[in-house]
Length: 138
Image 1: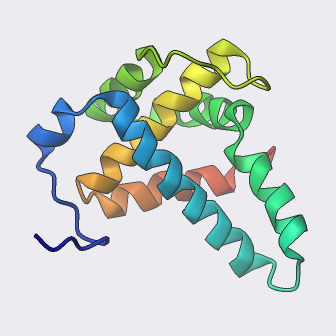
Image 2: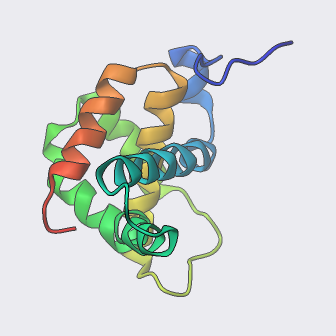
């Protein structure tokens, strides 16, 4: 079976049935690629090291937690349910530089991003990602 990276292979029903940590696994990668591409597009002369440092300010658990707190009221009921499933999932470990509560909220955020991506809700995914970059405190 051939796989097309830009075309998901999951129905809404299938995606809803996935473990939220699996959604977060996908969401983490999608979010990182978006942030890196956004930063390169807006800082073309910046060194790779400086781009990396700037990217960390967006992708660390604390930042994702703060982002989620700011955009949570903008989520649909289904998006909020996906976020809560990700937030409440037991991952077994927490990174050494993250508060447990922030890490769980960040996991919920990543689950939401992963869900939107694999269900091909690209317009909504772009809306949410643009909300992220419009938050100026990051």
